[in-house]
Image (cartoon, rainbow over all chains, first blue to last red):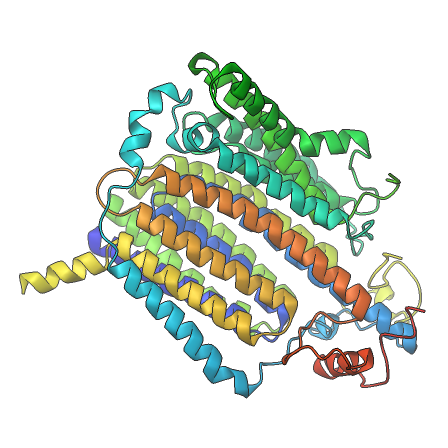
Length: 331
Length: 108
Length: 142
């Protein structure tokens, strides 16, 4: 068993490093993106081996559901922008869609030139070598696990990671929600979004799949949110799953985006940060310190914040996928 | 029994590494994407085997999420690259620059 | 002989093996970040560096007996969500840059403020196999 586990670890790590290397060495961007999707899958397996099912859940939801679709759509956006610019100068027929590389002609990066090889290699080797040396000589310590364990009974929940995220280190989570919001504001500041490039997908398969999968995804998201109080799961994972369901809907109907326009969308996106701030300020006034809760109120407040954070994260991820302010939003 | 589960997981991990050949060689983008989709399925199986071998029931949730959301990348791919068609479909014989439903992009 | 077996077992424990892998990933991402020019590839390189950092954190958290450190795991969870939103923002910036300049490539060398825009776009067209003609940047933006 032990030998098998070690063998599994070694094969997995070799696979992860190999996939990352081929991904960064690709001249074809599409290939790099597919390799990056595979990289996310292998990472989720690594998180499982490191006894971090919460992280594996988040990696599964984000790696499989969001990053892949985001990168594929970005490549297509770049391709269509370049094709449009080129055809603006000289009339050229659109590329043959069946040719294996025709669609992706604009999506190549030439191999790097030779003169950067040695400096880059030396720099990366030195940094990597220093890191490995430091990690191998790091003194053994128990970490913060006993401290968290000792305070679990006042945290209001039964899962240590949720307790850390929403009670002991709530400040981190609050600022993290704020950063996600700022990323969206940045994307919106670039102007109104252009339409997502999409070719027609005739036939009953796409609508049928969505009709079956989107409700299941929503139920799974709510389940993961609920599970977070006593088992791996929580607001981030649930938000990522619901966000992926939203991305599926966007991909199904890229022409009629099912986004709530204007005020409801803005309220949903800011709900997490605003509610967190209100609860935190109340704690300050009531004498528990900023973002502190009374012990008896910890559980309901944590659930409330988690629901709002899930909603905000899901909506923000979908809005970041669409990129740009919703059309018809004139304020 | 957990020894058997672990050995099976290791074997499946090996098949993922073998399947990488298809991603690396292509030749078409459909080949690459399909290989990645198959990795998703294999990954679900590995997660379920690991949850049995390591006796961690939470991994079933991870496998569920993977199985559910692997379709998102596939839908995104089909939306960008279209569905492959038999070479003798009438749409295909249109001159390439005819504006029609089969323009590569109908986004303007 | 026993000592050697112990050393090997110590080295191959997940608490040391995975942080080493994470450091390798970080260095690999750094190498890719320096050498590749296409911005999408650079974003992928940054993500790979981030994954290396997460792997180091989780690997160190899983060291020793007993349950892994929940604080490090919570920190990583926060980091993953921040990374994905930053990636989405960066990709939106790349799309915007491409719309403005016609390419998504960061060219080597120090920025030359006097260089006309046409030079950059001509080189980018060479790079992706397109026809090398005069300015791609001017005629449509007017």
